[in-house]
Length: 195
Image (cartoon, rainbow, N blue to C red; front, side):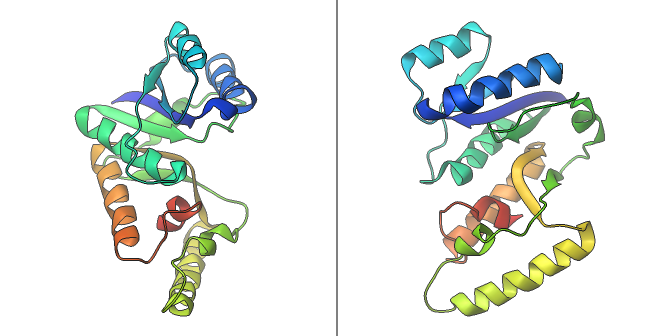
């Protein structure tokens, strides 16, 4: 499968995060494949700079208000258009300190690859829909997170997700279902809670 790495950025995220992300991805990780940046408000000058470095600047899905949720619908759309592509979506505040080749060799079809988080942060709960049933949702989530920690040693996070078209479809269908059913709000943390 051909890899495609995606990240998302806005004008204020460009210098402090995106530039070091790209530099470490290319210079330290040695990644030479296609790279795309989802444009959540980059300036024209920033777009020109990215394109001059052979980086694709892509229009995001804009289905949801928060970038952390919306970006994955774009990743799924791109994976669906390119069935032979493995789409890896990274947070732009990640910096690489070694090669990432194993990401693409370890991947199993129709699965979602992610990483573990060191802590079970409060944002996993803060994205639950408040109001009637909130206590029940929080208790359910606590039980689910306990099972995840038992299985993997830690909770999972969405700062890195990698999947083929089938894996992305499963993940965004699940995320969208949780949002549509009112279990989750379109808020920071919904992406990780859906894992």
